[in-house]
Image (cartoon, rainbow, N blue to C red; front, side, top):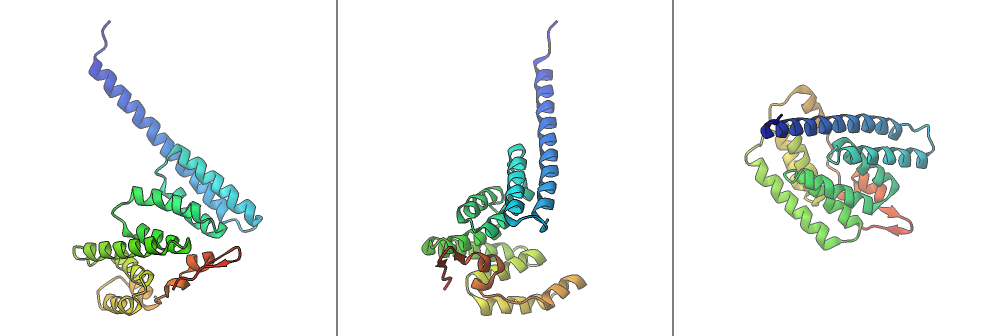
Length: 209
């Protein structure tokens, strides 16, 4: 009995798709458990961070595109003051979302922490240009505009950040968004919470200026 080769190809594709979906589902389940561990502050701090990291890595073995795992690994590595971990995880996020300058801003700041000043400043400049280019075609996107204010602050353009915030307040947004704007404070680069947590590593104090 001959089997249609086209039918075999279709079955193979369907099987691969089912396995892929199952892996993604299992990865997300593990990531949810990992996040619960990460937020369980009753645990010893090292146990909390290392256990959550182990689970997130397990999720990524099943689905290397799992955003929940990658995004939370950034937070864990920040708490552990692990610059290599931050840079490696951030590189994967940039690869996944090349159109999101947010992750390039993140990388630029991590490079500054790692004392790679020239590279850090260059990628911060590049990301800011990307924000400004994209805003020309999508000026109404609330989240993207908030990111742009953060990008301006990361580039130490605090007056421009405040001016953009004031401009946003004049736009028509939902009530909860205006509440965010009314309570939004421009932070100097070295006062961004994640950077503040990272600025002292061992006996080295990182100078962001």
